[in-house]
Each structure stands twice: as structure tokens, then as C-alpha cells.
Image (tube, rainbow, N blue to C red; front, side, top):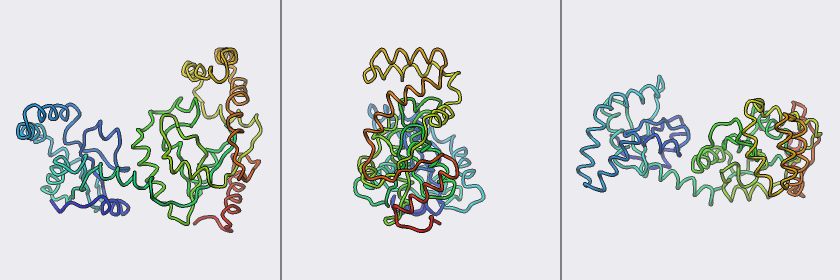
Length: 351
């Protein structure tokens, strides 16, 4: 095996296309990893638990021997998995585990024995987590332009259109896999864990150099069960906002478009509605539940906006803002782009 390398060196190679291989168990990988890494586990979840128990009860040597017996027959499959991931590209292979221990060392050695030049990352995923924490505690990023507005004005759609035209966008809801509202998880897969969310945000923000900028959507501190890093959230409150306005009828259309399978999953709306009793009172929530039962979606959506969402958003309306009355179509994108240039004092869009 070649000499191990630091996480800082590894991340530079990652930017140039290096393949990152996570040797930890599937459960560890699912919890959080380095963005873009593939999982080639030395031990599966049950085996890792077995080895851990054996280490505590019988000592290091016994646990290591058991580990060798579990891993030996897997070596060809592990090497082949990495070879397939490399494909026809000639690129460095960097292997890590929890903190740069035996698992990543062993896998890197197996790969080198099969003529795949691989290097172990010193400190493993633990070292990467420190990079992410340090970035959010003291790192620098560019200016943040924030799209704000009442629920349903099409902020997320505008953000996606801007991204499609190669404008620098930070899609926090996309990274969190949540629409950022009381009903934001409905119809979506499970959210990533907090550590993985932070890693994904780090991966996007680090591409924005000081002096440049990124456009994002206004959010509360929590997106579902995930917390926006405090220093990033504070920065989002300090910048000039672009406040989007749209008619109530159009807002209802957009919201209903976001929940196309609502009729099939009607029961999933019950719990989020019941959770609004403390703020709206039992009577109003009961009326909303009745609208839900009758599938009166437009009226239910209007009531939620007028009674619940709009008062909250209007209360948080920033003083330092540029207001736009736009749709979520191409004309709206052009208007948002013009507002961005106005705020930044630019005359051209980004390359």
C-alpha cells in the first residue's frame, strides 16, 4: 500500500475525480459518509457488532483472527466492486473507515495486491467531520442572496430554474429531502441524517469562493428534523432578500402540484394537521380535517395559507428586501436574475 494521505490532500484529489471508498459497515455509511463515496464494507452490520463484542470480551487478538476469517472469502468481491466503480477512468482510489484504522488499511492493501493503487486517508471519516465542523464554525463563503415569500409563490421552482441556467444555487430543501413545511415530508423518501446533511451543504458551499455569491431559499432553522448550521443560518438573515409575491389562486395551484398523490395518501395529512391545534385551536383544525375528509383540497390549502402560513411568513418579512410580483416561469426567472444583479451591482449573469 502507498503511504496514507491527509484528509486535506484527499479532498483536493476528490475535486479532480478521485474515487472515495468507504470501508465501514452499511449502517455507518447510511448514517453519513463523504459525499460521492461508494460503500465497500469490510464487515457487514452484524459482523461489525460481533467483532466489537468479541474485542471487549476476549481481546484484540481473538477479535482480529475472527475478523480475518470473516473477511478472507470476500476479498475478490470487494476488489471487483472497486474495479467496476473505477471503470475505464484512471483515477486515484482513496479508502477510509471511521478513523483510519484496520478496516481501511486492509481494504487498501487488498486493492494494491490486485494492482489498484489505493491510499488510506489518515483519520478517516472522523477527520472529514472535523473539516466540515471547522468550515461551518470559521470558514468563509461568498454572499448569500435569499429568495423569500409566502408559501406557494414558487420559490423552489424559481431556484431550480436558476440552477438549470447555471446560476449558483444552494438548494437546502433538496439536500434535506424535505419541502420545509409542516407537510414537507409527505411523499418523499427519508431525510438524510444531520451529519450527512451538513456534509452535503459543505460540499456545495465550498464551491462558492469569498467574493462570489450563491442564491438560496429562505428557511426556518429546521428543515424537517434537520438543523441548518447556525452560522450559515445567521448569514442568511443578514443578506438582502428577494421577496416574491404571487396571487393566492396561483399559490394554491403550485402547492397542489407539489402533492400530486395527495388523494392516495390522504391519511398522511391527518397527523400534521392535528399538530396545528396548539396554534390554530381545536375548532379550526377540526374544520380543516373535515375539508380533508371531503377532499376539498383547494379550500383546505387556502385555509392553511391564510390561517397558518401567511401570518408566520409576514411576521418574518425582512426590512432589507427587493419585492417582485412574478410567476414561476421564464419571465419570473429573468426578473429574479435582474434583482440579483441589482443587489450585487452586476451587469452580467454568472458564466
